[in-house]
Length: 132
Image (cartoon, rainbow, N blue to C red; front, side):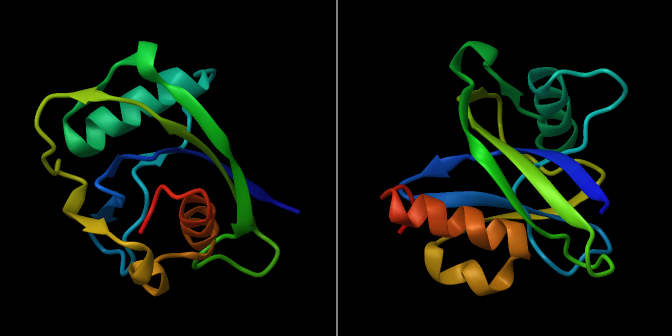
């Protein structure tokens, strides 16, 4: 079984979650991405978020949230994605980069618009009172 290893930054504000949409993709997703070479979770997450949204996460505030797994969206059956999620405060202005088409703030009711692993994360956040 093939597994895609990804990291995600959960940015919540007033019980809504920041979502990003890459060019050429139909779904919004939780910002983050794949590690390169021997990057740690922290290094990969900070790099990906800066590349996508031009903000810097304060690594002292990084807080592990959990690991979530599901069928990978748009991939053949049996290919899963493992999403390791962190919370963390950021500095700078949230702006889309060259690889991101747009960002939006989603409520729990927007769950139908996201991929399988993000649905599981939305459920977790909602059940824990973090997402309305």
